[in-house]
Image 1 (cartoon, one colour):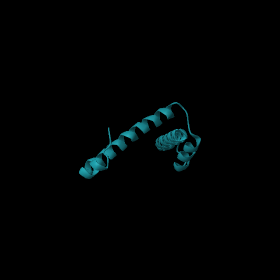
Image 2 (image 1 turned 90 degrees about the vertical axis):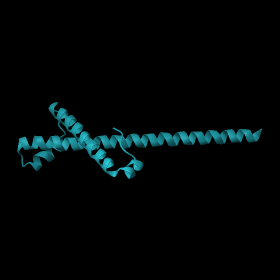
Image 3 (image 1 turned 30 degrees about the vertical axis):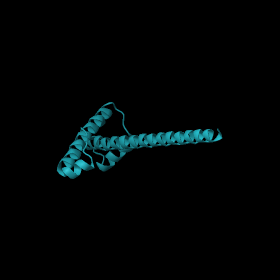
Image 4 (image 1 turned 90 degrees about the horizontal axis):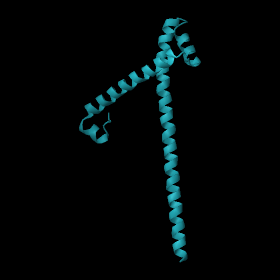
Length: 115
């Protein structure tokens, strides 16, 4: 689903808000599914499990449920950080390309002035 931009927001703010809410819920559902699948593999993030146990006063069943919730939130953070890294990498590549293009243009300009 493509999100509405600023122009569409101004035309129909209610749809813009609804779109964001629906996309957010769908993303949350997918994150919980990933969290549950990771939990089922037996792979445990010790820090998250410690937090879950501490918040549930050692009640293992409640801690497991809270762990999945904390893991879904951690996965959201992981995805966000990965996207930021990709954005920064893309920005660095664009900057390098612009610099190389400038340098190439300057070099051609210098060669033409010698003729």
